[in-house]
Length: 57
Image (cartoon, rainbow, N blue to C red):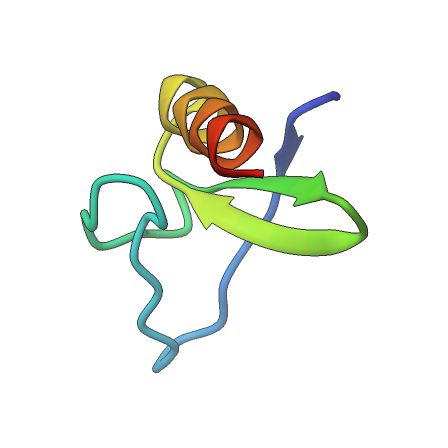
């Protein structure tokens, strides 16, 4: 899984799906997991979120 850097347009409020921190254009990582895009503040949160998904399923 590679990390992608993305931008968000003004007015959009996104939060990290792992830790809940608000995302900014400078601080957003998009990871596709099982065909669905998920948004994170950093690579660590993306990997932690994916690890949690694997333990649940």
